[in-house]
Length: 306
Length: 288
Image (tube, rainbow over all chains, first blue to last red; front, side, top):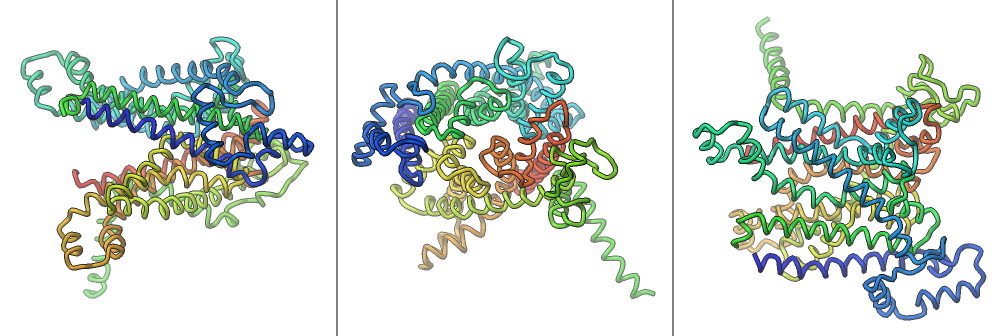
């Protein structure tokens, strides 16, 4: 296991360096003069020159990357063009909203997806199975912003039960987190089903049945425990798609998280913000994936004893 | 008489066999049916649509569904049904362009990676891992913010984030196929590496690549619609489903039809691709 973890641990900085390189190169690949773009359309030549020096664009590319990477490691992601505030401070202000939304969505997805997948597996080929699987494939085929619009129309506009936009109270969490939870719920339900079906065909489950263990005990403690590994993997490895979903969901609900911040930054061509938010989001995803892999290594004896 | 019977009998049995096959492969039949409908709608859009999708009628704005306008009209008095039908053309074009580009870049890279030595392999896979680390939407936003908001730039962005999927898939397939006797025989016969990659590996990898493309098609439509909805892809007045909902968003409570129908169209299309992809995967899965 040590070799496996070491290999993953060594790969981690390589991936992060690659990610930062890609973000760095992408912004430098902007057509035209980045300094002019960042200084804004009405900037004087002097302002553009100042920006060139401030961004270090008068230096060589490797030197620029080095100072960019050094800054990022120290928590300096530059200054927002729009607000003139440090990008890190802007992100720190919004990150709790995104994390809160993501956690709520994951709790909903696990709370519904795991039992639904278990029921589907237990009644395999029966109507509960078909019902759950139809919902799961439909859930994976819905545009989450469409669902958001429909829910807003019904619960906020027509019925007036829930706030339409923003994050003013706990009620504001309901629609965005349910919208965001739909896709992971579908994925988790499918994963739980196939994982349970595989476990249920194992000899030790048959043995438990033969010994007369109550079916509910077999499902919950014998089977689910062993089916959890692939479920955890899916949750960890799908964190990226959750973040992608959050970008869209936050924009629909005017949610004050980093997803909407990113989309707004594109509209204002606020490149330091685009660069900073992308870097933070991808680093978060890479770390979550790494944790998922680590957990698999710890929990899965096939890897643990390799 | 007798000859007529022999003419009809085999035809009927083909039909019966076809129906029976579809009954046994319900996913493929259902998914294929849904996608078939969308393709027909796209091809015959001018015949199906009751009006020009761009024609404004400012005397008939924001109308609820009626016989004249089955899906109602939008804020500019355009026929929503016509726009949804013409939107099928755009969505299918998105799929063809984005999936096509991702396959054209990803598959050769993957095969090359699988056939090459350690260093080339690692370099390609490292690059793919980096692209893979980005949530698709975030990478697409980064690329579109650099290239500018347009449908074509968006499709390039979607193709880029789909490349690693194909590269990894074809690399894994190559690693498996490379050890097959017929490939080793070809190597020992001195057949060029290029020919082995195209004739021996690629031809046998096509099945799984088609399955993946069917599933990727759904992702492409959802991503393109999401980003167009955010204003980072297709721009008005193009009847792209996501962009149409972006308009509809401003009229929640006044005109739900502007958002409802494009979203349903997205769901049916993506559902069709997902069901078809699942069915094809089961069909080609050697374990079953």
